[in-house]
Length: 295
Image (tube, rainbow, N blue to C red; front, side, top):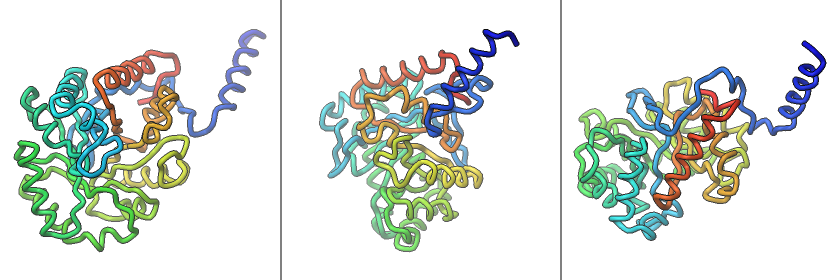
């Protein structure tokens, strides 16, 4: 190594050392870059999804969200169709967001077997879960729900309190009405329970490097998600932009999400076709840069 090479190597090492650990991607030059359209086989039943999911529930509550309020049924449906043609075949919706009719409208222009639909129920009892299953399929216009999650778990013992709903959903999976099931978690205790609970096949977990809108710091959350992956559970990341609070750091946040081996894929609540196209462009650009995202 000559003097110039030595100085360049030292400078590069010093620069890397200044990066926060949570933003550094290891072995980045030796792996294939990850793209939004990569095909992922999620969880023990290997449900196929795109790496990026189109989230429909930004500020979602009371059966509405920013997407449904701003775009309406046709506007959001058109955005989902455009996303499909960009390679995003994973749609993330929920009863709480009120986005089922919008997905149903999109499916008029998209082959049903080419997209994966995730939705969420707040049911706490067997009776409520059965009613939701029947209603959701009608609202979505589908025979089968690909991924059904219990929505927004916060209690450490949610798996005790909601066992009736869980049993109904599992029977639906055995009949082919649901392909796989799990939870979305909104506290550290609920997340730990999800990791230990055999019923959970897929988990929707909050992860970003700034600990914004998260259950705990990344160095606490990542080992739990890694353990889930080792068990064969599917892990979907959410709050990649910290519920929109880090949209001025989109490239860094996307690079972080793409570099996490504990995540199979992740969802972003994109509020317009323009925003969707921008996220796709950013991910594609990151993949083309030196020291690309590992895969």
